[in-house]
Amino acid sequence: MTDLLGQVHAAAGPYLESLATRPVQDRDALKLLTSLGGPLPAAGEDPARVIERLLAVGTAAGTTSSGPRFFHFVTGGVTPAALAADWAAALLDQNAFSKISSPFAHEAETVALSWLRELFGLPSSWGGALVGSATFANFTSLGCATSWWGFQHGVDTAEDGLAELPRMPVLSSGYVHASARKALQMLGHGRNSVTVCARDGVGRVDLALMRHHLTSLRGAPAVIIANAGEVNAGDFDPIAELADLAEEFGCWLHVDGAFGLFAALSPRTAGLVTGIDRADSIAADGHKWLNVPYESGFALVKDPSRLGAAFGMPGAAYLPGAGDPAAGYALTGPESSRRARSLPIWATLAAYGKEGHRAMVEKHLDLAQRLAGLVDAAPDIERLAEVPLCIVCFRAAPPGVNDLDAFNRRLGAALLEDGRVYAGTTVYDGKVALRPAIVNWRTTESDIDFFVDVIRQLIQDLR
Ligand SMILES: *Cc1c(COP(=O)(O)O)cnc(C)c1O
Image 1 (cartoon, rainbow, N blue to C red):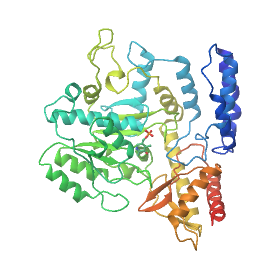
Image 2 (image 1 turned 90 degrees about the horizontal axis):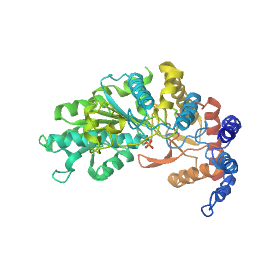
Image 3 (image 1 turned 60 degrees about the horizontal axis):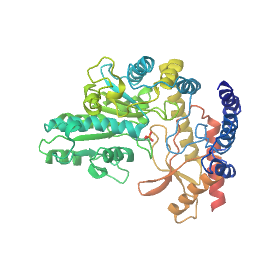
Image 4 (image 1 turned 30 degrees about the vertical axis):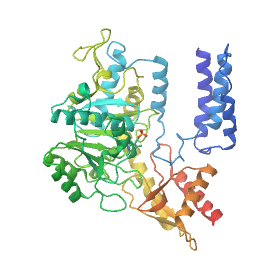
């Protein structure tokens, strides 16, 4: 077995060294993907050959999303400590189900959650759950909200579901993320349960409209979703003002801070999340701005008992029950058996500390401003939004091009086809735009400059 691990280790050095310069996607290498297929082997093959083939395909055809030039979606890299700890998690193969299945994984998760609370300046009394993504963190948080809301109506939704209840009112701005809607869909509320209160085409919150909707509920309990870091331009809902509304109308306040929660790390941006400690639940990602490997997300919940109420398991004679001191995180989150996903979080926080992570966030704030400056200086590019955090929203606007939406769609497709750098398109205030997000610790000023060079080259080619 150690020979096989040696093969992976041998491939790691050259692969990691190539990250700074290799293209994000080598299109030619994608033809290798067919070699993964064929019928299920009957007798199997020498594992050394299998791993050799896997590494050959993966290192050539894999997407360099952990490299410094992947600005699509919101995609973090992997710190050295986090990567090594993730290997350790695979090596140790712990089941972070309960204190019996792994006291070690349980303790590492307890420490990781407590360090995360400290990192973001949240009270130690809050509960939390490590999950696979911000989608699942939204699911976990809104699952707690659902349980709370059911109890307001005298129903234990964990026992009896939603059938006896009216529809759960959910209010948000136009910034509400697709994954929050998906969480509501998975929880049985339906993705259309959200009432969007937006005052403009960008989606900025209309507080008066939200107040109007809350008033019309006549005291019925509701959920407000505040968005800390929306995906088009990295803007924030006014969390304190939404917290005021939540307090006045007795609502559950959930904050989707998948990457925006990290604004709390720098005094330069902490003002964007003022009031976040007044939330009932917060969802965020580890695999974005914390720079730990996939799959990593977390939910932080003000009243820890909500997690057990929503995610406790029905008794099975062979499992520890809710009150059992041997119980663990499986009873306070959506999953049962799970890997020790705390280890990379624990290791990156132990290795780089609060200061290291603050410095990384501030480096990205600087890089985003550098990109904004380059965009502003380029005659064929037009910035569409302020840059409060780590996303720069802009579009190509070369003189003489009439249909800018069509042109920018072609630019977005050309960028992915080219493959040297990646960024995705969106629609911002009705305009097709690009929205590179900078959250990878490896990204440097020259990567940003290179990105703009590639964009401007492609604009020239497409005209
Ligand atoms: C990325 C993101 C999500 C979903 O995160 P996954 O990790 O992809 O599940 C949710 N909300 C916001 C604001 C995001 O940026």
